[in-house]
Amino acid sequence: QVQLVESGGGLVQAGGSLRLSCAASARTFSSRAMGWFRQAPGKDKEFVATIRTSGGFTYYGDSVKGRFTISRDSATNTVYLQMDSLKPEDTAVYFCAADPRIITSQLRNSGAYAYWGQGTQVTVSS
Image (tube, rainbow, N blue to C red; front, side):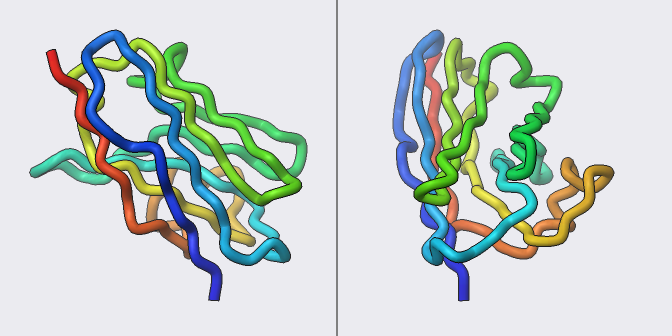
């Protein structure tokens, strides 16, 4: 059973930065993509960013493009989300997701990911 373990959430002022990490428990786990979604209270889960493990192609949600950067360390099977210029509207629980068979057209679809982390809270104060 693969587990995704997130870390790095917390409280930050608007304009600040945070870096989230997500480590897959099984180093032999081969995911086709690893990414991040977020969910604010009373809202649907929103696509943030994902990275394809083959080729390192990255994809971002419109609301974070230019401010967030996703990256991956293949040696440790860890994905990172560097969040800069944070805004109060970025406040949410951030979830890591991964899937071994996902196709490109489904990368922004939370329902297409089989494995999820427990979530980490990010709070941005104004």
